[in-house]
Image (tube, rainbow, N blue to C red; front, side, top):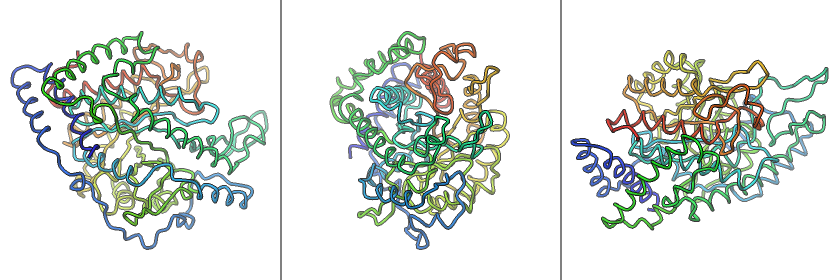
Length: 507
């Protein structure tokens, strides 16, 4: 019930703010929409079903019968089994009821009634963990979601790449430095970054440490999302100190003032703005399903539904390098009840995509599967229409999500891996253009970002250049948008979404 109240309150807020800025017929239309939103409250069960439970040939370890790409080699199998057994005895990190709540929200987005924002670090690290780091990323996502809610006049589902995003695929299994060859760094859940034999050893006990850090991260996120920090009346306080002084921060302050006016209006007409729907929010987690022994150890049978859920995270996605149709990662994910994602590049054909969908979501459940598109603007304009056309022809229910960062990575002359803000913006523009042409719903955005004032991606109003990259280049893996760049991107998406619905620009 609280979930539905949150949907209603979020949609009302967006509609009221939009009504203040609209004129003439547009204002009348929005006020009518507000009345309909307040009077209708469809039950979640009518949107997202459980589907069949016919995976009789599946078990949490059936993936072991398939080839597993990007998996580390552990030198001591007994040590690996002991670490997996230790995690298997630990409490779930998330619960099946939370997972089903996320799927219900994604089902609405799948049907054009919502939008998803996914954000967080490229890879979490043990040494970087602290409360402030989690809080700052959380509040940037809150800001982005609020701006996007205003832009779309529909609920925005918030998902953090947190509490499990440790493992990373590598192009090569080994790395050579000054004639010395050692295993590649695959993320803290597998080995450590220092280039020494001891650090680069694939250590199964790192999985146990990753579990405990994930538990702490989830405790922090739950406290912030339900303990008053996410109260919409505090939206001015969500501005990060370094963002406050930027053009994005100034624009956000003006926008927050409009929301304050809307809150006062809603309170005046009798809506309780001190209720949980306004003071708490839903926040979910997701990570790449890469290290299968860890995922298997946290897969549990739900006593309510009799279905298996991977309780390491609310949502998991399979990457471009591990989505082989006969591979271990699709075999594992096909049997769990979690919402899933799959990364798709220009290498994926329409026929292959349909087979992936049939494997990962055989019952065609709305909200079960997100197609996360990562191609670069030019390739996206060429390849995405064919993929959408195939999905429409086959009647598949998927959520289309743009990942505008991974296809736009390059190396500078001074050796820094970076991403251009304009290229990211260009891919997002192409994503929306194609969906406009195809009559489909652009359902979300997936970005690597942080709440910290880093200098890792160039461009945007924050004016990071190749020359300033070394100043605060802190990433353990790929470059991330800083808080100002992420907020700027949210405003750009919001403007595009308002254009789609005929609403006036954000002033």
